[in-house]
Length: 302
Ligand SMILES: NC(=O)c1ccc[n+]([C@@H]2O[C@H](COP(=O)([O-])OP(=O)(O)OC[C@H]3O[C@@H](n4cnc5c(N)ncnc54)[C@H](OP(=O)(O)O)[C@@H]3O)[C@@H](O)[C@H]2O)c1
Image (cartoon, rainbow, N blue to C red; front, top):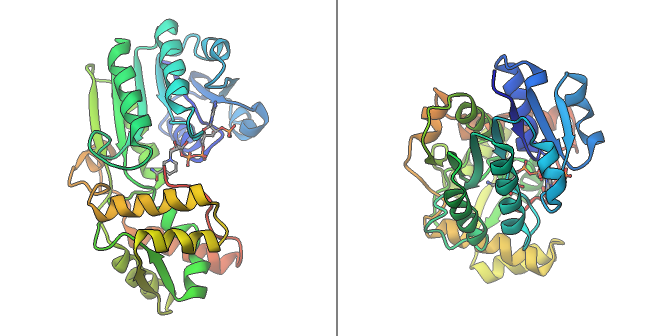
């Protein structure tokens, strides 16, 4: 039985991947959750998963954490300006540890998108190609949760503001991206692969319509120029860098860069990706059960 490891296992995507590996029947003792802080993975340890501490920036910790690992899910880091070095550290440590496949979560259309973070992913993909270890690049589209983690805010405002124009977004839920990552780990067929992953595309006017239907209250989409949208975000409390970043992602959506017609996600899942209405419904159901729990997401998109 191969030993699997997932980094970022204290975060959303990595934790889902570990949980899904176990749910698929991989013995928990053959699953390694790589985390910076052991205590954040106490739930996984309680299920018998091996929890090992490592930091992408501290090379010696990575070698120890990846000992005996056969197949590795490298979840991209979230520290701006550090990611290329950090990812390259993990790839190097995996090669030294004899890992036979690295599955990396990249971003949709990484080779052509103008998104401000695309260079991090392009450089990491290049490092993977140069490492000589078979790899699977999962170019993940946006997370659907970007639009469903703050349902009460849309209802209170009666509108969704953005700068995405008529751009369409091939978003999918984190659970689906995790399931695709697990499939790529488990069905190791040899060779190196790059997949463009996204669910059925939607635009922000359509998102507003779906929310209106599900919540039974009118929500519309208001499109703004990117600079104006960045100002709105700043007035709402985001710092200038974060606001410019979020607006730039919308501009990237407007240019069609976060849309894909690829069937790779459905093919990896062996089923259709979870649809927009279903994810929205789950978010609004949660809001009804636990009012006030779903607040504005501060997570930046990539
Ligand atoms: N496609 C999209 O829309 C989208 C949106 C947001 C993010 N992303 C990317 O997708 C990744 C996963 O998303 P997520 O929602 O699971 O993010 P998340 O919940 O923020 O989890 C990020 C994970 O990375 C770990 N990490 C960060 N820096 C590390 C380091 N130096 N060494 C070791 N571990 C480190 C964090 O550990 P700690 O718990 O110790 O902090 C955490 O476990 C993000 O990191 C980001 O690169 C994509």
